Image (cartoon, rainbow, N blue to C red):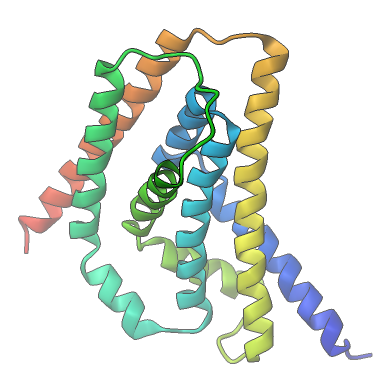
Length: 217
């Protein structure tokens, strides 16, 4: 018996949630940055940082789901430049993290400017990796989502991707905060050095790969 339209939309939503979690799950530089911000600035700061990454992933999901090949090809044609920009950003953040001594988490509410900075920094860092579009396209094909699907089906799929990514970052930031309170205080100095080192090394690697690719053009 064929499924009702509502059931098809629900299935598309659930598929999107699963895909969003899978895409957000790998703990790369963005994850390290969000973890560090959660520990030193609080779970809200970490979650807002994750929200920026979730927004960028959703944009990639829209491009892949809607079959916007012209936009995909344009982004991929500049991926090395994007990668160089992302590498520079990570190096700056990593070096700054290593040079600035850690402090106890701030208790003052986040200002609007700091919220925007937290959001936009991870959004920009995630959007500089347009290769994620290809990952979305491959996963969509695996779960049986075609570009010819209806607008509402694709809309529910993309909504699910955003929700799934959001669930991951919400769980990571507040889960880490809960574990920190349960286990007691971390060795902040060591955590600061490790996270700063990971960010700086990731930035150097990303910048090196991008410059190597650009010199071949």
